Image (spheres, helix red, strand yellow):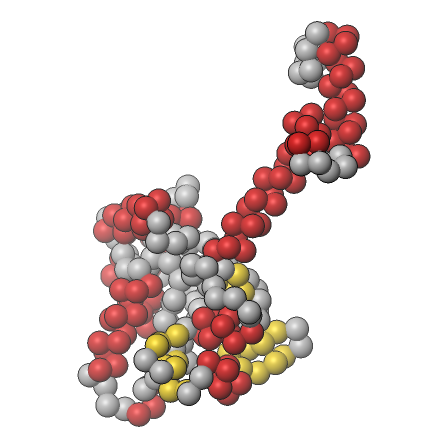
Amino acid sequence: MSTTLFKVVRSHAAPAIGARAADWRDDALCRSHPNPELWFPKGTDAVSMADERQAKQICTGCPVMAACRRWAVETREDSGVWGGLSERERYNLRRRARSRNTDPAVRVLTFPSIKDAYKALTQKTGRHVIWTGGNEVKVGKARLTPNQVAWQATRRRPPVGRVFTDCETDGCVRHLNDQAMRQARDTQKREAAACGTRSGYQKHKRLGETACETCRQANADADRRLRNTGTTTERSAA
């Protein structure tokens, strides 16, 4: 669960300015970078790890890296690279800090099962399920984030890759997505973009599907252009 000052999970532009006074966020390099996805690697494959290394390299040249890192650790930001540190590196920093802290109030809560943790630390509010505990719980020997607890307690399959919130409501752990869901969405977007073209019509046929109306019309238009001009390409007006 993220306790960030802003609620756009998949954007790394430093927290929204709003009406606040000027501070470190104004000078963050990530605010103007053309590819903010670098700071949110999608997995542990070679490409994702290369993105993470590139993001960290940019962070090393950022004039507010120290302030960004301090903010991310203090607010328990659990997604992406902040201040040159990954989620795992920030988690390790907090774990070492906890090992030196004897205050019972800051200890990680332990539960016998994921279901028990979910039941004890969530509250249903309308369409949302709000996490009311801390940023980490312990089940057996495993330490889990709120998103991981909620996913495993409510879904029939384990998550693929990292689990992110998919909701604008702060603290909601009902609306989540994992890498498999994100990839499926990307595929759907690509397939939807292909509709309305001759290639889209041909794809329907290859899959043994009934072509949609937009694809049938696009194919008919391409055939007409082929008969009239010798090419299926639509020529722009001079």
